[in-house]
Image 1 (cartoon, rainbow, N blue to C red):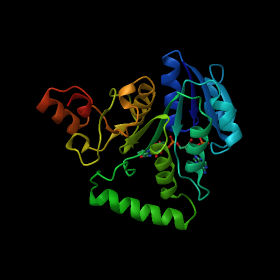
Image 2: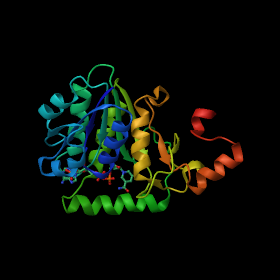
Image 3: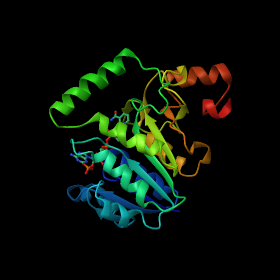
Image 4: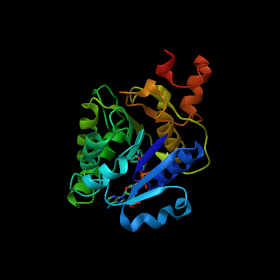
Length: 238
Ligand SMILES: NC(=O)c1ccc[n+]([C@@H]2O[C@H](COP(=O)([O-])OP(=O)(O)OC[C@H]3O[C@@H](n4cnc5c(N)ncnc54)[C@H](OP(=O)(O)O)[C@@H]3O)[C@@H](O)[C@H]2O)c1
């Protein structure tokens, strides 16, 4: 398996590089020129393509021949960075390649997610301030995902909960919608978010899904497991 990791130098990206190499995958990583150093510990094991992730020529070159593409979608700036990144991947990935995109719970695919007032307030306040400061544009990530959801590629959009650092707790559990008690605890280790992204490459049950994930050790996941004796993937089991 040859995998392209777009946004490889970030925290999530570096964890994904590690998981992909652990599986023996050939890895191509795309990151900004000034961040190449962050990948130093992998430099002898992966091919690095320096460049902005919304640069269509860079993406076309990087995804050539890849069976899977892992994309860190980030809405930095106000130049449609996430949308440009997603569109380039959709346009240039090999036909039939598995495409796995990251985002947060705030993205909704079908409008059936139920959000807490806290999350709604955070998105509204942070989103407003970030756009005002021209620091980030939450709507850019929304548009990027809208394009992915509308594409006929073999996509998965992984929606991460709040993240924390620390050793792995195992493959996160997931459900179709935010608001499900399974994921109420709203916390996942970043290393496990990356694990879920890499696992999704070979899990066809996740094609055309937007799983909302939480740590399998989070209290809400443990409570669900105890109540149902289900070890993983609520919707996969029902
Ligand atoms: N943080 C959270 O609590 C959280 C929660 C849920 C979901 N998520 C999702 O998880 C994914 C990773 O997020 P993360 O917070 O963990 O960050 P991260 O993995 O460190 O990724 C940040 C990415 O943004 C790039 N970046 C930073 N500043 C940039 C700029 N000005 N212009 C262009 N690119 C820039 C970084 O590239 P460089 O290495 O070049 O700087 C890196 O690839 C995202 O899809 C996010 O939506 C995050």
